[in-house]
Amino acid sequence: QVQLQESGPGLVKPSETLSLTCSVSGGSINSHYWSWIRQPPGKGLEWIGYIYDSGTTKYSPSLRSRVNISVDTSRKQVFLKLTSVSAADTAIYYCARRNYDNGGYWFDPWGQGTLVTVSS
Amino acid sequence: QSVLTQPPSASGTPGQRVTISCSGSSSNIGNNPVNWYQHLPGTAPKLLIYNTSKRPSGVPDRFSGSKSGTSASLAISGLQSEDEADYYCATWDDSLGGHVVFGGGTKLTVL
Image (tube, rainbow over all chains, first blue to last red; front, side, top):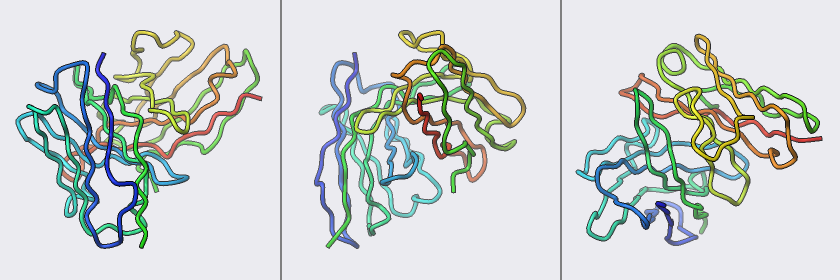
């Protein structure tokens, strides 16, 4: 079955760019949407955005100005870049596959997540 | 402040039936299917219910979902100790060009 694994630096300095990679294994990256979702410490889940294998993207209105999601289908990887980070961006970052059927969308499966701390 | 409103906590004893609510608006729950996720800290969130009331294979039929107007509910019957987790509702919101919204999460404690 499809498995997702997030990776990237666990510590990023304020005002710098957060960069994460989601590696997809056990299935095709093509013809699917891939999402990033985060969870700040002690808080709930927050959707960041998604990308289709063609490169079509959609982002959260609150993060749109700072987010870029890209994909490399040949390497089966999805990338997240978040610029000008602050302590408020400290969170566990998850990648997940977005599924669609009969008018509804849902996330399954999810990766284990990776903790990113923003601190000097 | 989450767009979808969930009670921060819920509890029940083994064998009981517990319901978790998720309140939204006409631009989200009122117009789109709802999904529910179970999350144990330190693990990957798990899809419990999709398209308001459908269960993925492997999810026990003790879990059920429903929706009425701008509110949705997750019901867990025959509560078990392993059900102790955080539960999140989520759906599409048609405002601001369309985006995904989550509830703030409900911590379920099995007493």
